[in-house]
Image (cartoon, rainbow, N blue to C red; front, side, top):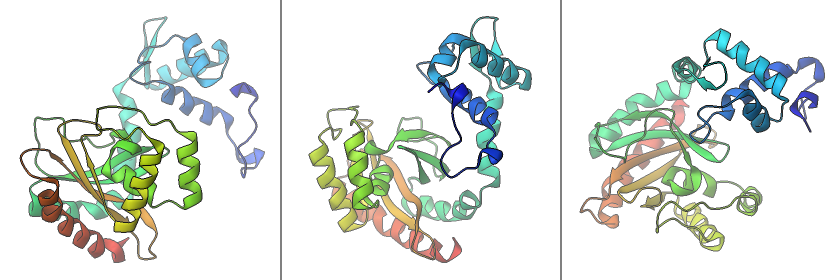
Length: 261
């Protein structure tokens, strides 16, 4: 169905649905690393709109400062970052967790993160720790496929059996390195192991120099709200030594936060 003719999503009354807002956001989300600059026709194809409709939204976004254009191609401007910054500045969870991440970073000398799931991706919404000139760290707002990170695999493992089965049935496992888990049978076993032990370790699945360890972050009712994790270089430390060094700190910190969330 063309997005111009789309009906309100289930559970939302037509009187409460602003179709134009949904379409405008979809245009912004259509840009990515493979589509950094697009014509109105290309934007329309990616969003299910006509060229004319897509062009109207692009020109409106250009007027608002979120999009720039040379008359043919359109691209996002840094103003788009205000949207994410508004979340980081207004959301309660990143503010609460920051001093606890500082404790983790001080106790392990590694970069500590709070991450949450958004669709099929992990999003890092808070961090604390040393700045390294290497590829083992993520900036705030970074999005990474859940299947290749410790925090992502942990949050997938904590889903119900039904949700987990649906996820595995509907997703292809992309391969990033020779260590990436690409077999669904193996992923199913790994998720079961993570759920049973209550923490996750991921090594070299996205980056050959990267190791991640994650524990669940739960609120006072026991509901999963995200994951506390550490990302570190592989270095000369064994997996066992790395886990023994940082896992207790992560667990103690997650437990200390429960009554505050």
